[in-house]
Length: 340
Image (cartoon, rainbow, N blue to C red; front, side, top):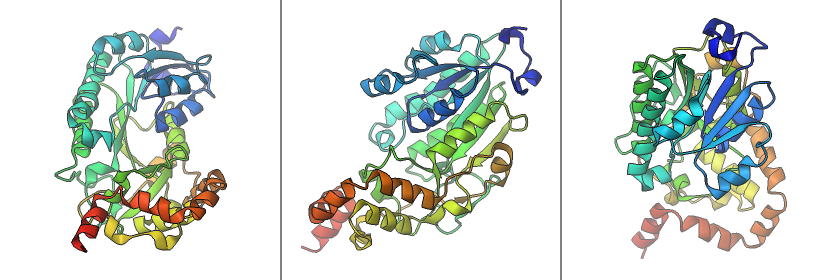
């Protein structure tokens, strides 16, 4: 029996070779999903925009996957990659801070691209299943009610266009005639995402956060491929209780690891406005997908190992390094002006 005629009830069986399309394959989460997928005997197609950075990342995988360079805003690009696909894992998105700087691009890619993908999938003779990654951002600010259940109503912040776009994508998917699953992802951490950019100052320090290492996210999504009990459902993906803290405690520990010291945290540099995050109930997703391996302490240790040489130099030039970081905060700039 060819994969073209495999019914969905057989797709859940072990040993069946699937044809998988992964959009946003060379992003932080995409690479972790890909690392898990290539361990199996499935046929994998990677779809992403061709940039120099993505091209460099793709070289590691080119002998094991088929790579389709294209733009999700272009249906023709998607149709070329979609032929004979069983499962689509849709990760491609414009995320903050670029989503905030270029909201029109974000809307066209996040909503328009998802709509394009759905339409191309629906046009296939045998419609693929869809795995989509949404965000904790759709719940809005949860400082006063940090424990988030899957039954809680989404309530994106008024100024959070990215969260609103993610919620709109969820609605498009639920209205489609596809088999789908939606994973709402928590605060994702990665050793490949240690850069301190201005977005870090937008989250109030008292916010409760539950991290999830990108390795665990990649495992969860890969494990979902052949799971029987996930379809037409929404799940939380987060690290579990061992990954919970406050944003202030998290940054104090990270500042210490970087060599800046815990006391380097300047509270006036951080927003008091609405943001998002909280603690996510993940009992069901963990039961089905078995992905929660990394703790917050594991992550801290991994960062220490990666920065063991750099942190020495940061300590020497601590004043200049801290000054450089603080000047990325518009709130700190306002605070300094108010003191003059």
